[in-house]
Amino acid sequence: MKDIRTKLMQDLERIEAEDYQLREGEQLQEFVALMLQYIGDPQPELRDNLIYPTFHHWIAIENKFTDDELRSLLATLLDEQHLFHDIGSDGEPSVFTRTFSVLPVALILRRHCKQPFLEQADFLHVKESLLRYYKEEKDLRGFLTEGGWAHSAAHGADALDELVQCSESDEALQLEVLAAISGMLHNGKHIFNDQEDERIATIVFTMMTNHLLLQQKLVDWIHALAECQEWPRSRGKTIAVVNTKNFLRSLYFRQREGCQEKENDFAAAILAAERKVNHFVSNHS
Image (cartoon, rainbow, N blue to C red; front, side):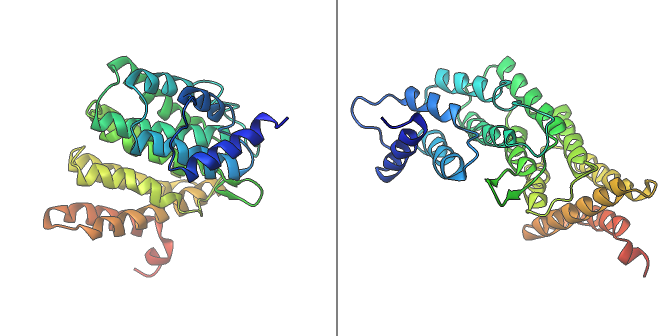
C-alpha cells in the first residue's frame, strides 16, 4: 500500500506529464486538499517542483477554479496552519509551509486583478494578512542546501506586487506596503543575497510605472529609506545599509530600462539615496 505522500507525488508527476489534465473520475478538490496538506513538504521535489507548478497551471493558465473555490482556497492559504504556521520561528522547516502558501496567494490576486471576484471584506483580509506576514516573518533564509528555496522575502514580495495592482489598492495601502518593504530591508539580522532585492524592487517599480502613487510620495520614501545611514553604529545598521544599497541599485537599473524624461526625478532620488548609504562614494566625494 503506497503512503499518501508517495501517491500524491506520482499522481502530480502524471498530471504534469498529461498537461495538467485530470482523468475521468478524478476530483479537483481531492488533489487540492492533499496539495494543501503537503504544501510545506521539506523536500523541494514535491513542494517546489510539483505542488506549486500545479497550482500555477490550474489558477493562472487554465482558470480551473470557480470564484467560490478560489475564495475557499484563499481562506485556507491565509490561515494559522499555512501562511502563519509557526510564524516567528527561525531556522525551522516550518518556513516552507509559510513561504509556499504565499505564492498561490499571489496567483489568486493576479486572477482577481483580471477578473474581480473578491468582496471588499475578502480583499481587506488578504491585505491585512500579507502585511502581517511580511512584518512577522523572521526566517529570511534564501536557498538552503537541505530543503531548497525558502525565500520568504521574495515570495512575500511577489504577493505584495500583485496586491498593489488591485483596483481596491488606494494610497493608504500603497504606503503600508512601502512601510513593510522598509521593515524587511531594515530587518536587523539578515543580509539578502539570493536576489530578494530584485523581487522587492519589482513592487516599487510597479508603483512607479503604473502611477499607483504620487511621484513625490515615492521620492520621499526613497530618501527616508537611506536615513538608516544616520543610525548609531551597530550590526543592525550595517544590515540595513547593505540591503538598502542593493535594493536601490536594483530599482535604479530597473527604472532605467524604461526611463523617460518625466521619470528623472525617480532616478535622481534613487542615486542620491544610494550615495548616502554608500560610504565608499561618500568618503571620496
